[in-house]
Length: 217
Ligand code: ADP
Ligand code: AMP
Image (cartoon, rainbow, N blue to C red; front, side, top):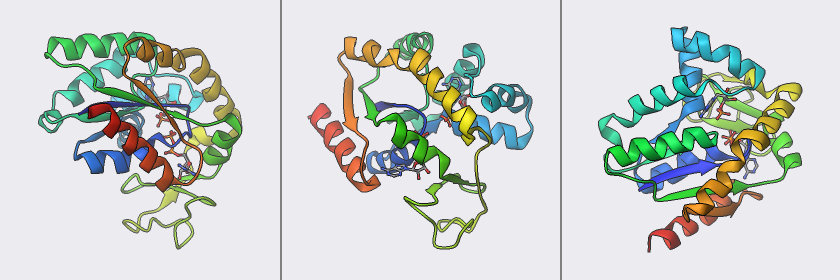
């Protein structure tokens, strides 16, 4: 199954992507994670992306699309994939559609995680990410048993540079201006399903999985 997750920063895409990808036995491909790994590794791609990420702006399309093309060309995507954070604007969505069509493929479903701005700010302000395994935690909503330490792997938890209040506000504006139009783009393609992303993580996962099952049956 080929799935895309759309929603504002902090909606819970990364959190849900872990569970959904594991339930469906497909790889989770997060462009934000790939960029962050390149930033940590000090690669030329990371150096270029960092400047945009720190401001809360989108990394230029040609860079992002080339990176996604490479990732989708890997063997583990044969049985499908779950994209988290890509596409992020209509031009990226159009290029993805063309890329898949060239391979004789198309997307099956786009899940939109729907949550209000206040909740998004609460979620982002308390987000902590593991430096070693990338697992996402929240200081109030999903705290690790030892502060600052990942329960999954023992790695160190850190706060993302772009989760500062001013950058969060800018990222929400970028979402409204550039990413939100994807909702009508995919509604027109008749592959969009909205999922209420408020409430506990497990309930959101159940709603998302129920929506996916309805769509494929
Ligand atoms: P996104 O990938 O959409 O930016 P994340 O998955 O990183 O969002 O989630 C943002 C923050 O909100 C994280 O700290 C995560 O632990 C927390 N979170 C995710 N889903 C929920 C939920 N249903 N209820 C409360 N907090 C959540
Ligand atoms: P995320 O982890 O999805 O919140 O993404 C973090 C940052 O990475 C974004 O604010 C952008 O700077 C960059 N990024 C991630 N995905 C994309 C994309 N599809 N297009 C452009 N920039 C992206």
